Length: 300
Image (tube, rainbow, N blue to C red; front, side):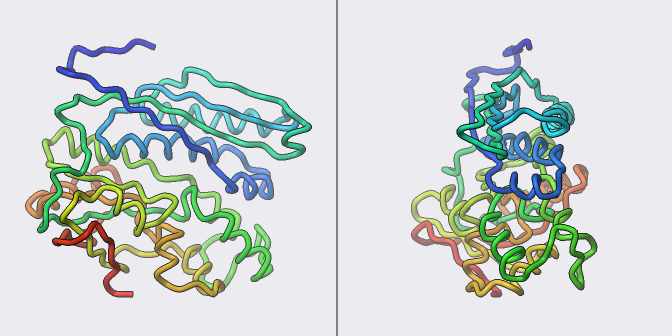
């Protein structure tokens, strides 16, 4: 791994660490493990992409009760393929075999480091009333809400991973294991074109309500339009079976929007074009108004 800093006036390193969570339990039920390798890499890349940071290198931690095939090869293969797809170096990691700790289970954690010029760091401070929100579509739950999803789908609705419910194009297990979408290609294209990306929120744990709020500067609030991008069928299925307030669904799940970009209104079309070029569905899904850093949902 070689780091070239020649293009940076004042380089800043950005690092993030995260895990896949209980989505690993669905992977075990399906005996399919390569997709969670994509999950951990793409989730971590998205976490630093919100600051405009180019991902450089990735490292992993795999804690497991008993190292076994094909789990080990599939997880590492998924991570390697995900890193290769985004031009990230997979430097290495730690594999810990601890039967007394994990039993037959395992845990997967990733840490990523990227770089951005201090003058181009995206931190939300430039967001102003009148800016618009551009949502980038998700393909499912990504890596959040799986404890609730498993309880609703497997315990309450009594589905199995191979069940194909009415209105679903695939089985429950396949839908739940869809890899987390990586949005760095969209952000990279927009930055290369000089688009004024003033704030970005990765919609993970906490959904729309908590993640967008973190980006808002004092004196602003976000009004989000629901239903602009399609809600994936698996999330519609959970909503049908769960006795959950609709607003709470937007706090727990991404509800079809995996990332939100905040830009001046004259920049929205450029973000949409960058998304199209990266084959990511996108749409304007709200606006910034004066307020107390709150997030409200319009159209529920």
